[in-house]
Length: 438
Image (cartoon, rainbow, N blue to C red; front, side, top):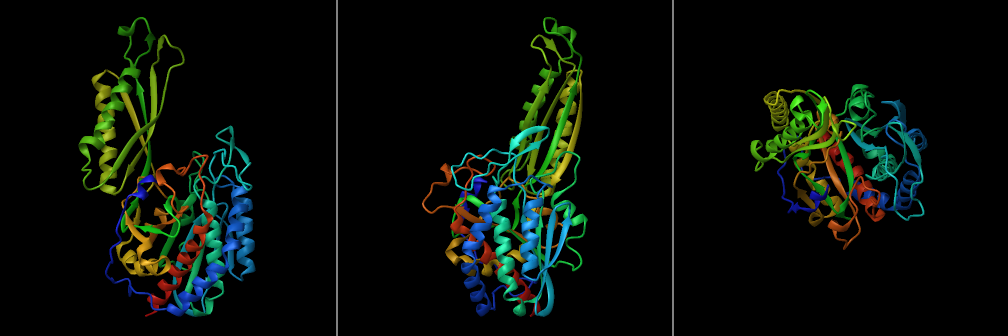
């Protein structure tokens, strides 16, 4: 996510058919801002507790219990066990109207924390058969805490909400174990966007390279699709001393890896969209002087629109198959789609931009370039208009190039940025509902 530090000056977008662009509930928004500020100590306490007790995807039972108890205390209707460990809260406003959803992800990562914090994680678990440390190394603890705060704020102004707010606390955003369904895709499959039917969905992500007090957004593709590919190269094994007796899959695999690098550098029109093809694993043989019969590699594909994504799929298959054939070997290519492009609905983004500017201040809202990280929030956006944005979590004055990145053992967040997240989520919901009624 380091590319989030390369930002563009925010531009004012026009109102669209989604509804009036300007927020027209200043008294309600002022009340929300006041309540969000009052919630700061609670939100920080929740975040620290969750940070100290992280849970891996589809195992977030303690986290889910804390969320469910909090929502029930607020008088919100609660559904548990959604997509295994997910929690959904339904807050019905004082007047009829549309339904807006707010989403937070709950899971930690199999990473051992290196931070010297009084609430640092000491949790451990078993992941893919290996003992691992567990850490909130992407900020999902802050997402849960901010949405819990937004739920408390909105529950106190529900009589002024013309419609319904659905709070989605989602497990397994970082992915499930191989062969296990989970995350946003399963939430959607189990009907989280129905009963009542959601009209729009909003989500925020903390960012450790964006200064606190700032929001970052982008209409259209803001985060990339993510696909996994595997290529099995089959040749003929031989003694390493007699390579002429082999069809060497190691050399063939090396040529395929080099060939794959030409997809982005020579075949994708990079002035329009960024893309990535990365080989992350290469497994071949067990002994230094034996040419093995097979080699297997795996990697990731990232794209910012579906046309480029499909172009890359076709190129990988063509390059791997033809290079293998030229060497007398064969290549079996498997591509597993993981998450689609996180695609912010342009009309909804335009409508809600004044809300973002009111929440953070016009000079603290910036349009950014797309990033090649991925987010399964995209599964909600495939079904309903959605807006996903970033909330600053870096201390003021820090150099973003020197702060620990997401998914690393030293990842840390300045908690003074959480109140803006609470205010932004609550105000997005209130403004959307009030704009839709007019």
